[in-house]
Image 1 (spheres, rainbow, N blue to C red):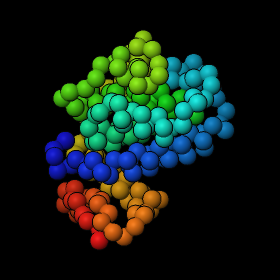
Image 2: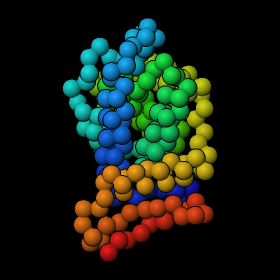
Image 3: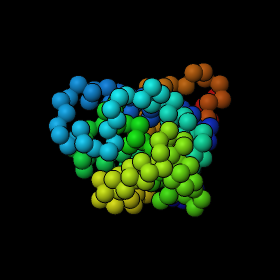
Image 4: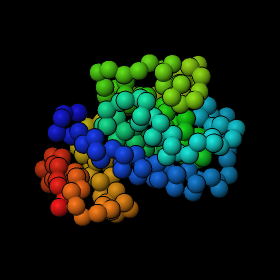
Length: 194
């Protein structure tokens, strides 16, 4: 992605909060669904819900993975693609953490010139290196190896996320809130709300 599509660093903590709340709502709404055999045998499915919240897990990934901010948008796109391609594997509280670490790992490898290896991501994610390797492979096959994200798609997701963030997390004060938006031509612009 070009630098005009980059998300300002100061917006990232809000985006992490918003993305985690979206994933929490989706996971909780899908927790009540009856599981099929395919869901029970998925490598992404844990036996219990992880003790760490989705938000804390995302904040941990953000803090230690040090991948570019655009990786989180692309990871969200990958998650969206994955659940649409794998209807028998809805996002829920038992698989969201593993799907999240796999999507960020794949996104970082695809997007960033410099990234950590699978062993490092395994430590960040609280899983073994072997499990991280298996999650990555299953995630890639689940995506059908469709990793390319067009500029138009990226802008569409950025615009959606920005609108949703403003709707659900309005600025706390009117003084010097820095944000971003995607203009009619699809360029990311920075704005200063005074």
